[in-house]
Amino acid sequence: MKNTLPVVVFMGSGTFGLPALRHLAGRADIRLQVVTQPDRPAGRGRADRPTPVAEYAVSAGHPLKKYPSVNVPEVIDELRSIRMDYLIVCDFGQILKPALLALPGAGPYNLHGSILPAYRGAAPIQRGILDGVAQTGVTLLRVTEKCDAGPIVSQSTTDVGPDESFGSLHARLSEMVMPLLKTFLDESLAGRRPREYPQDDSQATMAPKIKKEELRLDFHEQPDRVHRRIRAFSPEPGAYAFWNQTRLKLITATLSATAPTPDKGSTPAGGAVCPTADKRFLAIFCGGGWIFVSDLQPEGGRILSSRDFLNGHPAFAYATLT
Image (cartoon, rainbow, N blue to C red; front, side, top):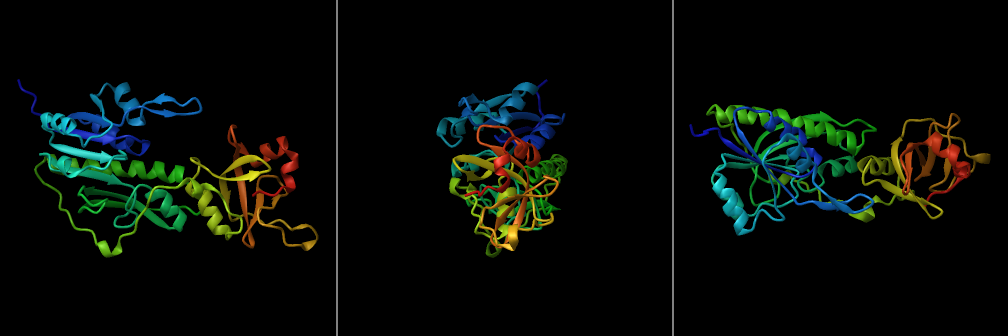
């Protein structure tokens, strides 16, 4: 008997798409085909490493294709031959061009880490934290030629904690896409295609890819801006400063600890370090106030608590970061 289950093609690469992929892999009412990017050099040894999506697909025994570009004619012909019913994209890393968008089948649909039309682009979570948003979320939308501007199917929101990092928010948002995808497929497979509604382009903001120079901390900025920069890039790639010639990534920080009293009541210089009395935090002066760092990572080393780092580097107690 011919297999008549609908075919769902999932295109993804990074960890943000894993909860959605796990949901698709667990459904008995579809056939799943996974598409990802080729292995790339990673880690200290720069050895080729598969994407997180590839690792999961192989471990779970799902059909997997790795394409340097999904937009070349031979790949488009191969995807056409699959006769897919749905194309779902999440954290894939390639722009889908018109020839691919025109393939038969529902979609493509994208799972995006912001409340569109805010933060269209490659880095919505980091840009939201940098801007100090109090609320964000996820969006399921249909893909069109214009970046993240297609009609919206559904959205879900969440508050952003005052000290929340990119890592924790990324993990929470990635789990939030799964219910959107489940509801969409449940209704679509039952013959009830969910309603779509257009975005208001006048309210759109962009979230371009993070540049390397944005990771360097400037202690002349106000404390809240430095705090947001640390959170936006924690734990990876890591906002950093230098102590002498050593690069230090500042991993976890807050604005809410008790400020230290500078020696003799003088105003410290930007980047001046002063441990709190219990050594739980390293207070760093910036822009007229203090941030309080509880975890940091020396170049080439592991993440340490401020207390452990200070115990191993007592000269850091009253150092100056640049």
